[in-house]
Amino acid sequence: MSTELLVNVSPFETRIARVENGLAEEVYIERARGLKGNIYKGRVQRVLPGIQAAFVDIGLQKAGFLYAGDVVRNDHAGFDFDSSDGDQNNEDQGNEAEQRRQRNVPAIDSLLRERQEILVQVSKDPIASKGPRLTSLISLAGRYLVYLPGVSHIGIARRLEDDAERDRLFVIGQAIRPDDAGLIIRTVAEGHSEEDLREDLKFLELLWRDIEKRSKHAPASSMLHMDLKLYLRVMRDYVDDEVSKIHIDSREAYQTMKNFAGRFMPEVAKRLYYYPGERPLFDVYGVEKEIDNALLRRVGLRSGGHIVIDQTEALIAVDVNSGSFTGSRNMEETSFKTNLEAVHEIIHQLRLRNLGGIIVVDFIDMRDGDNKKRLMEVLHEALKRDKTKTHVAQLSSLGLVEMARKRTRDSLGHMLLEPCRPCDGTGLRKSTLTICYQLFRAIVAEGRAYPCEKLMVIAHPQLIDLMLGEQSEWVSRLEEFLGKEIMLKSAPDFASDHYEVALQ
Image (cartoon, rainbow, N blue to C red):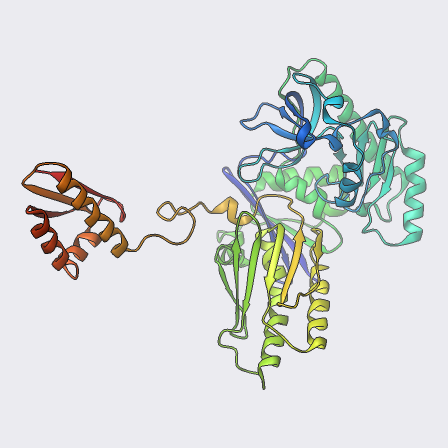
């Protein structure tokens, strides 16, 4: 599989696309610098025993959320970290580890008190209206290692599958692990020597000592450490043997990445290419068009079918439709072929849009048990391309598949779209006829409540045209009913649902 990274840097925004076999599969966008990985000296605002959590002021508009299981305790020296996600943006504690941590944790008010100062790290960026998720289990990611101050754990990234190589790296980990810290050995460490890992560890130890030193004198609610810029984080965390080329359209970013690679990732330096072309880099590879399509509800399939994706507060709903596809001999075969094609497009869209949480897919109904089994096999196979952890439930009798995909950052839609003001994000609004009848009621109320000879109605031209046209008879009847003249005035600057009734 041919994989390339495209780095588009501008003064106001950085965008990175992962292109696999000519198709953009993942997009990372940074406008304001993300918070994930940043370390703060926080102050506890509130301790909430009812939800086993505390809110911590780290100097931002919204306080961070700190769960009891994410607070360092004396017994964390032997804590069992899960290292399945050791390759993704400092996510060294995976879902299984979090579930273990949530069992039998002490009461939050026995761990923290209000106004207490505590060293915390952002484990999840703010999403929508939620503040950042925090942890006091600090982790610092390097090229080959994740450094875990205050624990005595050695872990190997689970995606490293070769048993002999895992054993070799574990022995190296035991040899180099400091007495006061734990380590997770990342997938990219495969094949590297003990000396390479020691050099990485040396850098991480110096970084942690500097953070410790600054924490002693820094005021509460201040930042002690900021994670790398987006293009350096992506290069550190996502560049593997599959990535053959990295194209950068900014000379400054190219030089920064080249220096970073020369110091920490020499094998990657030769894959960096500066793109000086006048045509935008994302246009050359068709990424801009892919992003635009990823903001639409409806996504077409080559067969003529389509999928519809709706993102709500509670879940993501995906509906599969055969549309105009009639190329099969019977309905069962049409449904099966459309569903198979939809599977690959759904996984592509989940990755491209970065959709997380509960996802419900409504496939076209099939009767054949073998077809259902094959559909689920193809779904699991397609998910192997996605590095974000996803749990899949079985196909239900109603043709529904439930999935839970880990949320790692804001979805593309949340970053690039905003709710439509007239409809408040519902996609629907009152019809002009509904607003017209609402206005008629307002005319009756005003005309009967206050003495006057005339009523002046001021409204959007579309509403005035309706009242002068097919609803003109009702305007005349209202004049007769009230015994007052009704005058109509068009106001193009009014919103389509706004009107005023003036007395004269």
